Amino acid sequence: GRQRVMDRTFFERLEHKYVLLHADLVRATMQETRPGEQAMETDSLLDTEEGGRAREARAVQSISGVIRAVDKSLFERVVWRVTKGNAILKFANSPRMLAQYRDGQVEEVEKDAFVLFYSGRVIGDKLNKLCDTQDAHKYHVPNTAREQMQLLDELNRALLEHQQVTTQADKRKSEIIADLARRLGALEERVLAEQAIYATMNLFNSSIGKKTLVAEGWVPDRSIPDLRKAVQRGMSRGGASIPSVLSSVTPPGPPPTLTVTNKLSATFQSLNDAYGTPRYLELNPGIFYPVTYSFLFGIMFGDIGHGTLMLVGALFFISREKTWEGRQLSELLAPAYDGRYVLLLMSIFSIYCGCV
Image 1 (cartoon, one colour):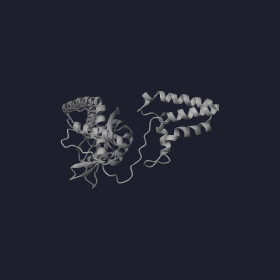
Image 2: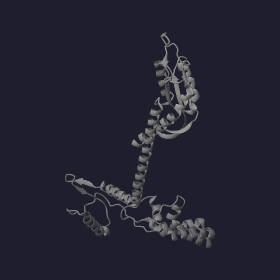
Image 3: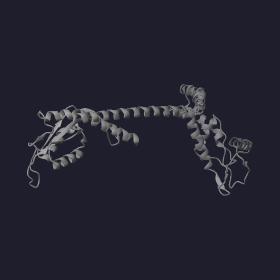
């Protein structure tokens, strides 16, 4: 996004500053000290271009930039082959770790500044294309010291401005995240409540021009007064102008089975439901499981010592009910805690059968 574009520009300006500080030193080593000479010209870099054109004197031009330090030798060989020796490549030989984007990630790469000296437009076009293929970043370096200082000041101001903007943006992000962190619990409860509301409303049927919602379901007879009170509370809290109507309808089939359990019988009832659920008004065999299942286990496992150890473990889990209820336990503790009353009865019958 926008931050990535700003970071990319920041990295390019850092490279430009690095080139600007080192390219002039490289140029100084190539220039001959001649009083009154403003432009460096040479005949040693002149050669016959393709097509048999005659040699003529041209002003020496240069290309400045940075390249990965590991690619310096390869870059130097390719420059020599492309220009047939009609270009001079000089490195600053002071590599520096510079950041860049690669495959969407920021990485630190060791780079070195270089200056290419050449003569002729054709060779210049070849070298520009070569820099693009070799991932060498080119940057403009003015010829005069005054222009270089002006450009350096502009780069420093731009870098300082980027750092200030980034600092302010990070500070603003921290403030927003801190505010969200303080309200995260309330926001999470609100989202979960809305999710539950919409999940429940999706179970309703629409009628009368999709302006009325109709919900059909099963409820025990003893819970109908509680249901009416809940509807009234919902109307008063929501400020509904049209009252909700609660009425009984003729069921299309037999009612579902409602099995009432408690802490002791819940786990035993799940063992029964693994084999099947009794139909409406049928006898629930799960009520016999706490005695029959535990007694059969005691006959099979009848041992006073092991039964005592199981009893101690079951009593420990039962004593932790107020602390662990509603918490997410580990995969090792959760099954044992859920079946704590099963362990309690099985241990009692194990001790009994062991004594007998």
